[in-house]
Length: 354
Image 1 (tube, rainbow, N blue to C red):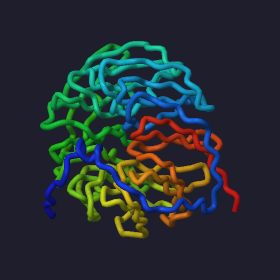
Image 2: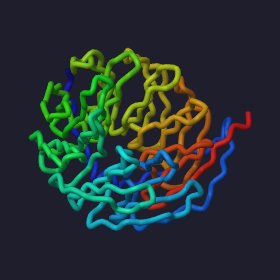
Image 3: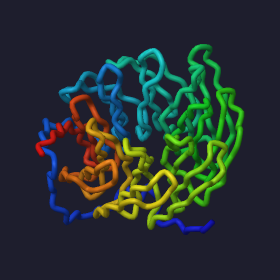
């Protein structure tokens, strides 16, 4: 397995400026944008859509924003630290989100604080939920944290380095998450590490994905994209020319789409073979999301949204005029919610006209 030298740390990459040189092409879509919400800082946190269609966004101005489907502010809660972690829907209609102030907050969908805990260290990851209701997340104290809201029990699992990759719970009830020392952890709800897989670089953000054929896909900062067995055995490796921050998605035609910091959006078959590649003019930090029509949208640091078919062909672009780090989210009616480094939260209706 090849070793790849790291380039610039992501904290430096945040501050780089790129010019796009790309002309927006609406392709098969028409776009209608509503007035944006302006926050007090950049947004690195992916917007969340709750079951009752509230939009929740964390921001580096230390605030959590709660918006309705028209983009109007419902509530805003100020924490004591930057919010880089993405919010998550958890049991009983609540929303969880972590902050650099070391708190994991729980809100109702109207933005009212229910409770908070301190798992230890700044929180970079979102939370995932086991079938028994136990929550799992990473923290900045070289650990993986489990928390059972029903009895208040917390379990800390020691792990070297920062845990910056968000967890996912597989269909077999096992959680998988990556760390900054190149380890992919397989953990049960009791905090037992069932297995570890060593990769050649940081799993800095890419959230593992359970594919429809039962394998697991994840991106790594060694510039490689991995497909593994449910037990963690590496089955396939696909190499890009940049570190992989993006989490993958499986499309309705059973292809895998993800982005790389080499500025490309890759489409692979489930067995890891290249099907398509779309080159942009900026880093791809964001993760792709699926629209209601099955097409996929990916944001780029060049300020554009790229719309791809489920097979990875480019069908449209949209010029936002602002750098995009956070992954977008989709409301009913193909309304796209995206946030930018400039601190804007936008609602964009995407309609087919061809």
